[in-house]
Image (cartoon, rainbow, N blue to C red; front, side):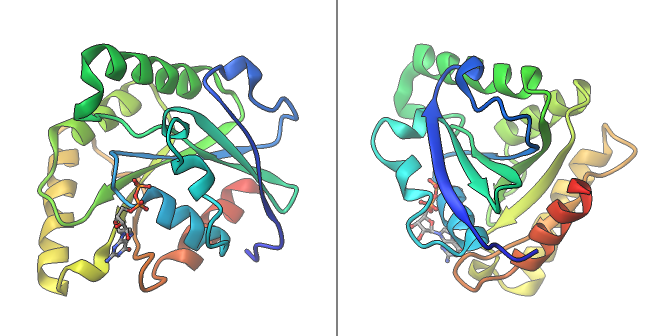
Length: 196
Ligand code: GDP
């Protein structure tokens, strides 16, 4: 898919105030610092696009971007910020849960995972919850330029193994590097395919 147009539309915490055009939405989520803004900038080929959403305060919001006038790219708040405290984390979690469960036009959720780590409890629990609730999602490994091919393969295999302990089928898996522009075509083609 060619990105002809990408524009920031609106930020908010209230799912009811999200755009009501009915266009399909593809949402991106992950822990803070996973590389979400970089990935969104890489995908849209707009250098500062997602920076709007990483400005202070905006990281806790649902950010909508309209792409090619056809679909929304949705930047969801990062989960598991240690510095927010329990109350802050629960508030964010409610925003995320409500969006994911109530937003009918949410077509696929891309769960970003830093490829450098072993399977993390918070990511595993989150994906478990998605699976139990029948939410369509993909796993997107980020920053693959930071690992050699052997370690990368091992780390992804560890995640797959953990997933297969619970699920018979794995979700689609993407390997990306915003630094080296890897995975862009694959992700955009996937969106184009399910958007049809
Ligand atoms: P966010 O908090 O999830 O939006 O993460 P950012 O996109 O701001 O990235 C967090 C840090 O990781 C920044 O220092 C980025 O430069 C770095 N980063 C993000 N993506 C990549 C990548 O693909 N490769 C490398 N080497 N660094 C990356």
